Length: 221
Image (cartoon, rainbow, N blue to C red; front, side):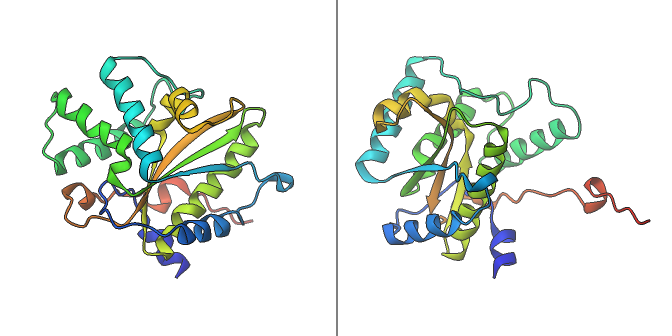
């Protein structure tokens, strides 16, 4: 069951409006908190938004995007220049995704509209925000990644899907204002959580993984 949950996890970008019981969300988060962390610091903080709270943060960010305000994350997620093979992988997944929704190269208006879907959590009924105390260093961020992976895997066990969204980090000021988050927390990312809309063309996306020989070394003495 564990391997099936891991291998069936993917970024789903279209959800039904079927609600997710808060007890299920609690169960997922409680199980995920078994993730390892250096000296058991447990650096994760999670804000769950549904209903009016979710609508409020969506409206706030979309208003900022329409106004042309410039927002930037508090940390650097991607490198300033992508070396190979990373730039090729990045381009492939982008064009594979756009191809499924018939967005052609150069169609910036529709690309922007597709990117805006991040800020509705792709219509998922549940949004999660992951934050970390600003005093913590890279080790705790690595621990955080293991926690977030647990959330996505545990969601699959419950028959749910997710999409982790770094795009939300750009709008940390609006997130703090609308959701009352303390200033000492850095917004790591958001995440959509819900039941997959199997009729959404974009959900046909299946990303590929490099074969083991591309990234595994095996040494024998």
